[in-house]
Length: 331
Image 1 (cartoon, helix red, strand yellow):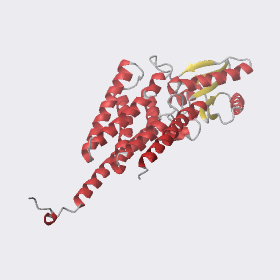
Image 2 (tube, one colour):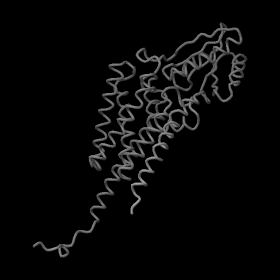
Image 3 (cartoon, one colour):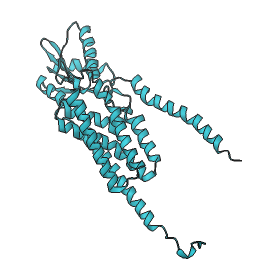
């Protein structure tokens, strides 16, 4: 008597709690451990005053990675170039904090609170200057953060549909490219033209959003082309359970516990969010790294799609043809 139904029942009973625990860990762990870890922060001003400020910041052990600048202009340039998330400038009137809420409103708020507490202990006040402010349509970054999941789902859906429809080789690549292009155009139309969440060059934003979708859809379809339908679940699970919660979209990669922040930037959702911020708010500053990450994901995924199609074609071509003499006579 077969025990297959019992084994399937046991597999469901065990698998569902395991998946629930994995999802809870992936989403709740980074959120519960959000704190600055080697967060790039600039310090500028007279050497003696800057040294004192750096020593005070060192009291937050492991929180900040200090970068020294000669003056306010250099510190401002560093913030605009995304070399640092903010900078403290020591002036005769007191400390001045340069922030960039467009890089992450949560990070800008954290810096304001940390520097304000430090200044209050010394009996001074801090003037805050938002060098690169978040757009008026999304001052808290909530809309941008909310766009990570839909883009990931669109990529997973495109890769799954291409696979389930039986598209192979160049036809599958063409379908993925076409779908990603339309996703980018529609997403830019909604986020930029309608909601005003993005404020950079419209076509550049559409290209980034499309590339983000292609990186995911290519990975899903590519792994499915090599492994079969199980590849959809594996690639989709990695994107949803690691890429989405580890993206740092609601704060910054340096605000997540390690190695979550680093892993997130090597996956499409994290790299895509970083690239969208660079292109939309910072005139493309620090865009090379995330752009290359997305390009590699897309290229490897599409390459796997083509390879899978070629392997299937060779397998069909190498299958032995049926011998007519072995056919059963009719009648």
